[in-house]
Picture 1 (cartoon, rainbow, N blue to C red):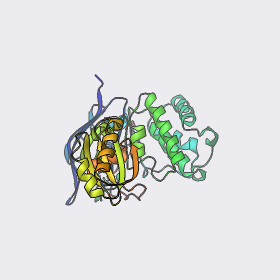
Picture 2: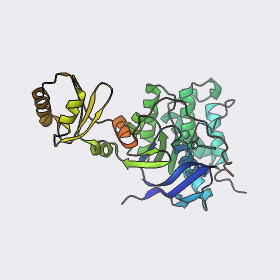
Picture 3: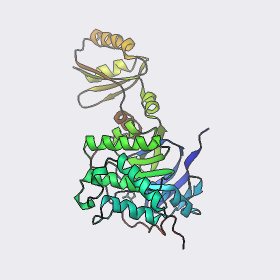
Picture 4: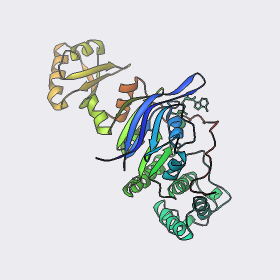
Length: 333
Ligand SMILES: Nc1ncnc2c1ncn2[C@@H]1O[C@H](COP(=O)(O)OP(=O)(O)O)[C@@H](O)[C@H]1O
Ligand SMILES: [Mg+2]
């Protein structure tokens, strides 16, 4: 059995009267990519800040790499890498100098630093920018450098808070490739995102989080299969009547009425059910204007479990008032 690298039990966190995290429990297995998918304000950053010891635990328990985040926070910090937007890299230093500096803080030897920097610059494809000042890098390159910095100490667990926020799709997909490569090296990855596709394409398992609670957890396949096998979008002359007819068919799991179309979730293969559906609608004397068939997507999963959509690309709130990180990892007095 694979060990759990992250274990969280009954975690709660409030800001004044706002309950940001409400009794959250989950576990992340060694070597997997695990995502928190949820809208702005869901509580994702609060959880990740607690797990990385940036924020004090109020209620519940959390372990990272076997260490208690409250009582053994120093060991936790030594086990992890962090890629957060707010942890800025020094813009007046070169790419290489930034990584050098980070390695020195964490007491890596000169040889270790050199080897790791070469390895990482290759991974994030910034070898040619080695001696470029950070301020002269593009936004995507800066984020890649932050990723490299988070990996400098070969952490057991890498934490990423919205790693591709604001990126175009090409840059985002490239980031996913790097993260898959990091996973292949054996690193466990915990990330938060509000991009459906990111959770879907990248994660081994996903927790959908909304209003501080985990609504459901599973692989992308599991979450989609729970909804049904196929989805039919139908437009007819009389959607109301058609909805009633469809609800009498056994293999129809749910029928939801949008402004124009009907969304019909089917529990079995659509090819068996579709003829029956068309036949019943025709017999009722109703014309079908459009039929579209697709497999349930992560968007459908999200709407199903949360009862609302997720507006992608909306600006994220800045999280302020973080407690200081304490002493850096591995520095002995
Ligand atoms: N430092 C803070 N002070 C007060 N409220 C906060 C603070 N940080 C977050 N919140 C509130 O807690 C809730 C969860 O926020 P957050 O964990 O940042 O969610 P997410 O990362 O999913 O957007 C939101 O309602 C947010 O406004
Ligand atoms: Mg956040």
